[in-house]
Amino acid sequence: KTEAERAIWDDAELKSMMEVIVSLNPTVVLGPAYCKRHAEEGSSALIRNVLLGIPFVNFSMTFVDVRDVAKGVICALTRPQGTINGKRFILNATEPQDSVPYLNESVKKSFPNAKGASPLFNERRMNTVYWLGRNVPFLQKVLRYYGYPDEYIKKL
Image 1: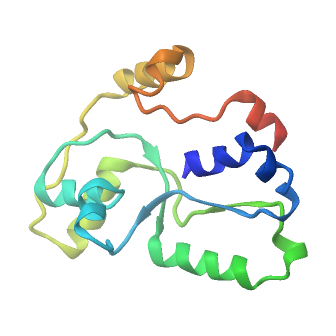
Image 2: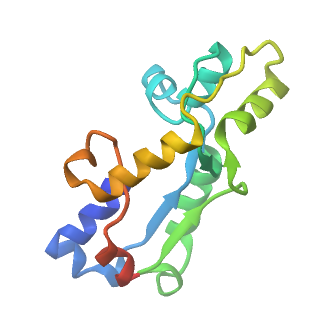
């Protein structure tokens, strides 16, 4: 998601068309997976981790159902161009939640026998990782830090 939007800013031809481009930015997308790979590698892997008891990074995040994302795309395609062109829309359905406890609770409502996940790192270690990602350029790719550069934020 981040790379696709960043490509617009990096491509001169696309950048010149900003007044007609619409950005839909879903938060963490959950819901039925289209294929096995999505269930194992995408956001849905978080659900799989809870079911199997696999630890993952606990951080504050918001969620949206994939079916609601599809509705957002349909709305963007069917609204008058003047009302949506050149705008960014955040597609979100929840308040920020600590990921591990929230997903444990949510998944266990439908799957009471789910093992439940535990946090992979504590908050202090995560803050260190975020700081390194923001401030040490050669670590950004290794740490999968996808923060927007300041010049991008200033243009919004």
